[in-house]
Image 1 (cartoon, one colour):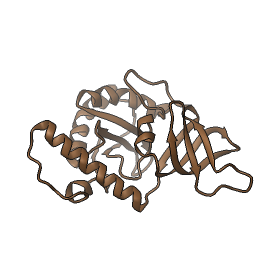
Image 2: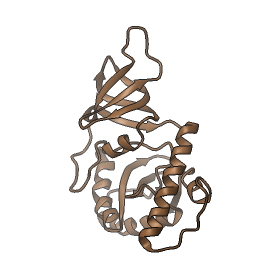
Image 3: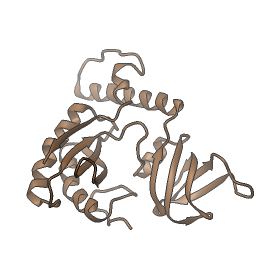
Image 4: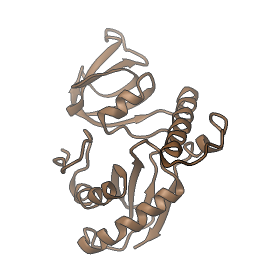
Length: 219
């Protein structure tokens, strides 16, 4: 079961337990500096690692953005101190094979291949693999990659039944992600009044979306 949404949290897939407590702390900080939360996850990796995945409203996230987020959330985490032991703080971008956590994510990546898990049984399954055919108001239509004998080729999954969805890395996804990232960065430059360097589509600016940008510090 996921946590109740905090004020301003438009995600449909949220954390539970300690992750949810941390999300409540960092979300207001992120909103205050122009970012939105994608996911919080505390794991036993490298002792104890807190991963905060975030992005700007336009979906971009640079290494410099990761550093800015890290500097902003660290004091808030120190004050509330939700984690009793020492831990590494890792701030990262969602990456190309990103988790989908908002309705707008499903709309943006319609036509692309995903892996999905549900918290309840839907059409006799709790795991799905296929393309997002349609993102509706209350559910998402998945076109199964390989429908078993007797199964319908598509299945509608209610948003409130989804526990996790992640894009699957494909050539089409890489091309689309680089193109979207390049356009978003150019639009951001225009808004800031910066000159456009006319970088070719999918070149250096777009390529930055290919890796999962991140910064890490020990707390």
